[in-house]
Image 1: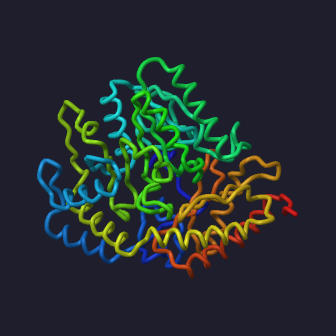
Image 2: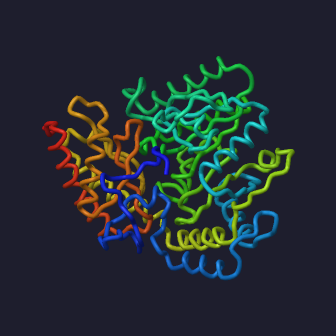
Image 3: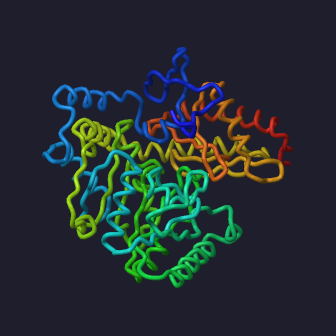
Length: 424
């Protein structure tokens, strides 16, 4: 394995099985899972409907490729197109969010005949060569080489940077002015803006609601496409909306939408939704060997059906709101916690040193202490200093209370270790 293939924890953890919101390690110890394999086990571990669909399809045929019709792929595409909010939508399936963003970039740059792309500062869009080229988080961008010319825009991080002290309305106006100024300096035709409604790897940061609608007004005047990266925000995780872009819907839907992670509940599914004229702009052959495979499509259909029938978006709103409230109460008075933010079951806890600077050591300590107490969480942010809380959307109130109690104790232990004073 390569040296850069990182593992969590001082003593790496081997997970052997799971059920509901819990997983077990090779020693038989149980953990409450608040990270879901990086927001991927979206509904529940070993969800009966999904495991049954996978087993039954695997018993019939495992693989065909997109050269042959597959009923599950067509049905899932139709459902996603209808849910996307994009008119006259077409869906292309991939195997991951990275590949989905690659496909969206290919479509946008071909449609606009330009390799210029706007991206957000602190963003993350995948680990491929082109996705790294539009990633605004330096921790996940190992090379400056890219087939794209990327221009980075303000707005993805509300509470840091030059506009942090402004009101929401002033913040949005300043970011729009920055976008206008950047476009005035760009040479040629810009293809697209790609943006996560809530920045995932960036630490669950988000702009004020409506910022991307304001951006959309500017983009439309220039003919620039809007790509919304819903790899982490899609399928109701934010609680208030099914897609993250819907918090910015005043100027209409995006031109392209990318998705992955949660739709497969652990199976490898990604994809891009686009207006027909954009999706159909390629004038060369293209297929997908593994995208849209019979097994993953059967899993995706079963998972989406379960999510909608059980209103897991509503559960994310209700239980996520309770969890966020408990975590803010736990953080009150702790100087090591700079901010608790997020919405639905997508919550970030930003940690800081006594002098207010980001504290990756505090985040690493928190992960270790949480594991000791039987809770799995993630981390992110530009410095790796933000805890990422993203349980399966079927999380119960009792499990939210259990996790909040563990995190309360964890944060107090980290406060003592880092050495900062409690706030008065």
